[in-house]
Image (cartoon, rainbow, N blue to C red; front, side, top):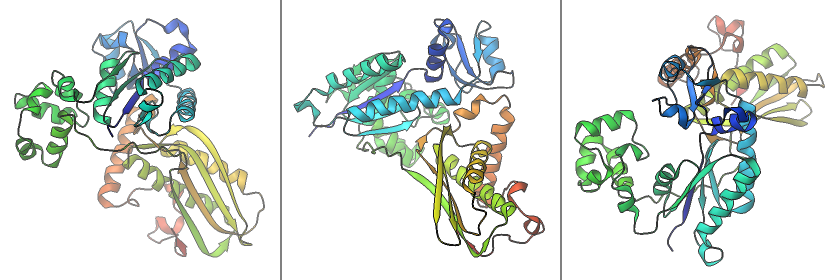
Length: 395
């Protein structure tokens, strides 16, 4: 059976949400991100893009390129709210979907043609999202994830497209190699140095040649350029999570040490999120008392992978949960509702130094281990003097 895969992507999502809240921004060049010159552009409107502005650009440079731009500081909570609202609409209407980021979805409609007509169903879904949220969204329907994703890019802004089975190579051929998923700046410049500009050139190359230049990645790029992709739509599960918990050999009521351990656990989980380029939207804290009664408390939060935000929420939940003043046997932390997203939201900070600091710390952890860098608040006196405070704990 021929696969039917829809890729849906909200157009300039952060900007669109800001325009929904502030209609006076419609039709004007808008930059969302850190509001000082030291900030970074997280998202920009199509009007701003005509000046050469793009996401990830320093805000100072963006303002120089587009002096009339209106700069808006990002609103985590609003973006998370609308992302969840759209997820609920999609969830209610399709049999299988994958949420790959805060504003991007894959939908598997394979076999639905016999009942509804897949393109018709996708069109109806897009119209419902626009009607209920007043946010622009584009989609493309194709036989696999790669072609549908590229198709959505061609359907923007606020459009839709169908690439019929058998027409994948023809559709991709005239497009820039930069349109291929997995081709970042480094690979793009390498291929351009070889004189490769259009996808058609890669289609006509022996895959072995691309492998010689790019290794295993070359084979993947060659397949994508030829419209070949068998990767499945992975069912989105809000319970998808990462967690850690620690059991004490000796029950404790030392709240100071418990807080320090929670900070340490949260740091490690946040590092795992960033390493996997993921964001979490739900934090859970778990306590088990000496009498073996176990309690949990969770809270939905704006999507993030930043230690500062997560530690604050974990400590808040612990304070609310720990009411009995009884001996504690076990504590745990869990992050769920995971999506791809990397550092999207950290770009709203006015201090890109914080982003660079996280990058530097994560590089050290990657090289020397997850415990190589820790907050002082997550260590006790003994550890600061070379002793392990977590003896008697299992994770």
